[in-house]
Image 1 (tube, helix red, strand yellow):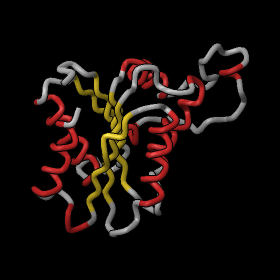
Image 2 (image 1 turned 90 degrees about the vertical axis):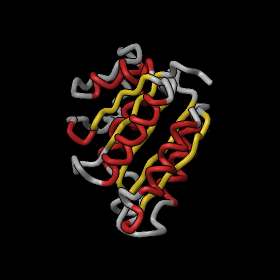
Image 3 (image 1 turned 30 degrees about the vertical axis):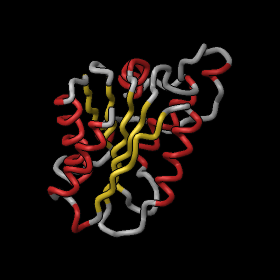
Length: 175
């Protein structure tokens, strides 16, 4: 086991004490308890615009995005992360907009250079709404050549439960 893996957790719920935020915090605690360096960023509080498809990054920008917003804080963190955890609520059958913006903005660098492992945490009021988000996550893992460590979901009656916490802890321990 790599005892000093750099883990970046992107938490995308605008609800500071919501279910997704709770899952992300539990993951962070478990990763740190296992000896990893974990950074948790609430991307829902960041101002990150969507990709403009202007191609500045691939022409004159040498891999740098023309947009100068809060994504500038994430690029260095993502460049150093060895494990990336996405934590997002599911509002309408897909990862929410707050997590999509940083994912899409990675276009300028193609993929995070050191990420070798990824995990996904999702919560929703409804059961059975995770397929689209899970498929996108799986495809990102494949494209970035990152190991899919797994997914934990929590519908309304599973949120902030001991059972869900144990699933999140077990996922973090797989690092």
